[in-house]
Image 1 (cartoon, rainbow, N blue to C red):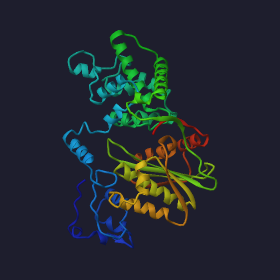
Image 2 (image 1 turned 45 degrees about the vertical axis):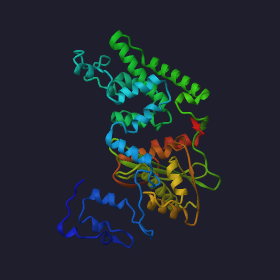
Image 3 (image 1 turned 90 degrees about the vertical axis):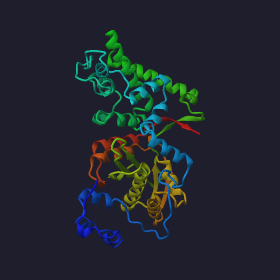
Image 4 (image 1 turned 90 degrees about the horizontal axis):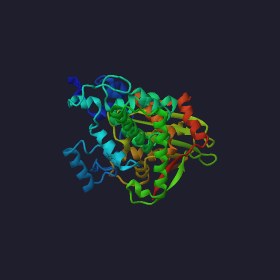
Length: 416
């Protein structure tokens, strides 16, 4: 975003915008629009003394590697092929035909009626199942009333609108990443594949299965995939051993509180958010927060969430805390002594918070044990840039808090 500065502001130094070690927001607002000021205020002023050090921004630890350089060159030369969606597609825990189907979806090569009409293969461009105009891939797999009926049994009641709103790429990325505990990547992929197969059967053979039949078939295939993975994890294409475990939120030790945090980045807009919750040892809600960070990397979002989670717990009077994040890279950065990371300043701020007069343990957890923080982070995209504190949980937050409180678990294959 290009912003024209007034003539009198063009010679101002950054240090002149700092007052008592903090940004002077009132002074900055005299020269810049509010949305830019909000972005500036989210970045902390470096407080560590010492010389500047060179860092390589394309690795998490800030150190140069040939692999990261190759990936960068490949991204520049073939930007579409470097999209993380392709890795998600080829790691779908399902049959190869399902992965191939998603490869076609990602490349926009499914012969929907809109595409067939564009190629002069048919006079019909609308959906033959519901009669709607314009049968696109999104319509077949998600937005058609028939598809909505099929999906309804797999969704939480209040998740419906979120499920049907993103663009196709963000939608696939979100659900192929295992972001929802009640709809894992395997089940999501199988339902999409069956919807397409059923659509073709209706278009070319005039046979339409009931929504309940598709739901039942998807569950059966999903069960078969899970059983196959239990017997042989190499069916996922990963030559690693491991075991299935039931993963869920774990209560902290008696007398300790638990801080769960999460960061999120929307691939379509590159917007970044973070969220977190603080609970007592019996699972009692103490407080939460949501942050709209404007933009940034996923590691920065995770670290911003961790920093805010620690600060929130401290302000709530917590003096013994277990902090859990599902970002292994963020947890490792906090534990390491590297100074070359692009996130060094942020990590230093996290460490300063940890080193206050209290006891803090930092642990990695799996996404299935971090569902409340994941939900909170997902709500940040619809909020203004900044930090938003939560003292009383809304009904949806209450739902996920109860999900953890009753000991809900989700199966996950843990690779060793």
